[in-house]
Image (cartoon, rainbow, N blue to C red):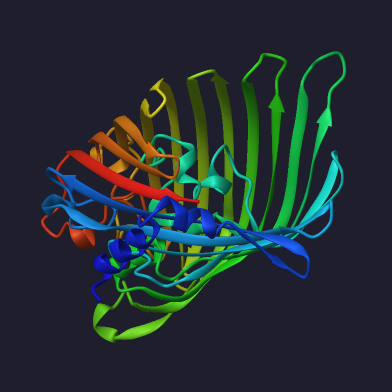
Length: 413
């Protein structure tokens, strides 16, 4: 079966009847109820110029599929266990290599103190830990300046543990929710960053390392208003092979890179009242890597922010829009200094992506929706860190502007 057909076939299984989905919701195991939930989505993207997200979108591409299945059970009033399997295809990324998305045991001692362990979703900003819950929002794609879908696996989860809780503030000041965590990050070698580096002849066999951080969010006294901040630190190591940039005729050599600094700061706010929903986030990611066995250094400074709003017009129709702004500067030091040019002018199309988006979501029934979305982008951000535009699928170079039509349908139960 061809890969695009595989995604469509999986989606069709979910769409057969509403009764089929409802029958699969729960069962008993050792006198405990196990809830079963799943989702599947199929998308189509067409762009007028540049190919986007590793797909041949200038010709129209349906290589945009993901699906997952999870099981959860409340063993006791305080203990919850669960796991989710996940798979996807996004152009040249993913390509149907299934993974364990998360698997966790969660014990809540009190409202203000709980612990989670296993492969735990990472709390970072508003939506990092709910990226798979596509049915919760109107947008076919989250703002790519903050939630790039081509590197979803880079921050989605860590193998380790969390401490979390919610503290009620006195004098009607709302409540504070906190999460602190530490663990091991393990990226897929079929993700955006490993694919980007293949343009330089670099091929990873492994990439990952220590990940730790925290999140603090305040549910303010103003009804519907949430304010928060997240911090993520990582210590990553990548290993593989590469073509030497110093002597390309020397053949394949061992390749390694490791973190000198790797951190993310993210600040966010959300207002939800009735049919209106407004979000805003800003993110700075600094990645300072020692590459080619420490002989060179690559420093990327990535900054992104967005403002998004949505309004439910009628029961089955929601409209939304966002403006997303992404920029990157890149510097090289050591043996590589001067070979690739440094990129510091974020006003150039090669160093930014500005994206204006309008979207509409139609709920066909309680478990099936269709989204239609337009993207109007300036810039292509071609650099040493992924941002949606890849030279490998744009061999004739980039145009400064890209307009995209995104169609997406998804089911869930």
